[in-house]
Amino acid sequence: MRSMLAYGLPVYVSNLMLSFSNNYPSIVLAWFRGDFEVGNFSAAVKFIFFLSAIAMSFSLAMLSAFSRASAGGRAAYVYGYSVKYLTLVLLPLVVCTSAGSKLLVNLFYGREYTLAPKVLSVYSLTYMLVGFGYLVNQSYFNGIGQTKEVLWMSLASAAVLTPVAPLLAKLWGAIGIALSLMASQAASCLVGFKRATGKFSATWPKSDIAKAYATALIAAPVAALSYLNATLGYVLLPLYLLAYLTLLPITGAVNGRDLEIMKSAAEALPVSWAAKPLIGYLSWVLRRSSS
Image 1: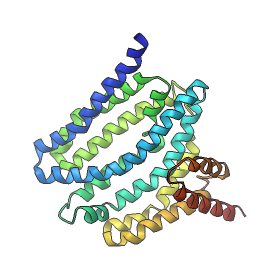
Image 2 (image 1 turned 45 degrees about the horizontal axis):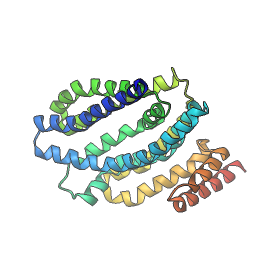
Image 3 (image 1 turned 135 degrees about the horizontal axis):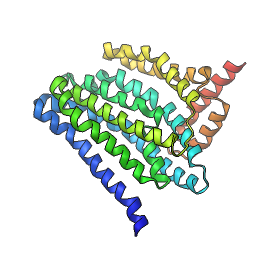
């Protein structure tokens, strides 16, 4: 019973705090601003669910992987690979979501939501923390049975969000709320990352992570132009993704071993039909750049 409480109680408290963090910003925004900003904020948040859905699918898979790896003493090693590959997948999507925010909002909600693109552009950048375990830390700690660490992460997030959200909402409205959420998630991520790589000696391939960020940002100006002209986004965002894929092997962010691991992982994916051509293209670029 004691071991059950030691594992389950921090999870329960963390979930309560997560519920608070999900509802508190909207309440604060409604207090300081009107329905227009609340509606625009809600519209922007719905697009974040797309990134969250991708992250959730990875998190569920990683929780299982960490649980199995923990039994064999390899969880700390798996952590580094999980962060690396999730970073490679998510960074270009974050850039496209942020730069293409006007296109997305105009397409699904219309031009009346004039503030939503700005909120989405800012808020989606939270996922740039992915290279520091932003979407891996919680699964890692739950998988190895260290749920108290998840509680510390939740406390760090709430400690920042509670005082900062009203201050920034008063100053900048919905954009201020987005910034306060970014700050709270950054605090939670930093605590989790430091504990994972410090106390629990999880591996973190900093060189590979740096190359992934460099690759995503080198091509980012192409995508950024779509924020200035939403219509151009239909052309510029696919061009950005193509440029990102092409640069991955050239910058060394992806190597031959990575492609072999990706091929094996793709076999288990329901969208393997889409993953295989991308991996094939990366392999072709790698061969060309090596010759």
